[in-house]
Length: 85
Image (cartoon, rainbow, N blue to C red):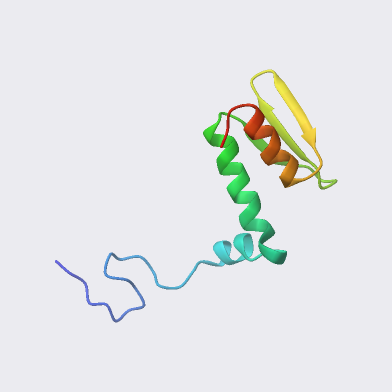
């Protein structure tokens, strides 16, 4: 049974409005939140965990190996070295 599309929902039942979490996470300063989410996904695809540390650096961990890197560009370089895209 199909539900009418007049309640702020798309035809598939998903709400048309973004959730507050999406806005807070992805609308960072200059897209920084989206870049971080992308890097976390890339790290997960190659079996790593990406952790943002309090001092602004990042920790890339895999198995018994971890490495602190200063910025997201360095994270991307490291992931390429260990087999990520």
